[in-house]
Length: 67
Ligand SMILES: [Zn+2]
Image 1 (spheres, helix red, strand yellow):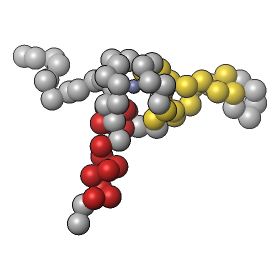
Image 2: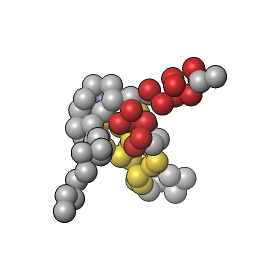
Image 3: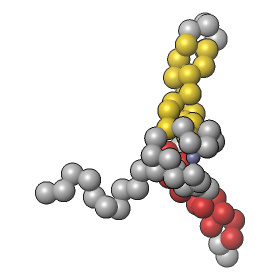
């Protein structure tokens, strides 16, 4: 039984980098915390959703072009 289905794409849709990291920022108390923002290690683009990183913004373009 395959644990990694081929449909699961896990690389940047812009630059093809295979990794990203979660952005760390200080909260109101001054503590370093992980935010909801993800940043590609290849092109440094920021994303709030892993799907956006994978698609490289294609989803947003297709929705605006939809009838
Ligand atoms: Zn990238």
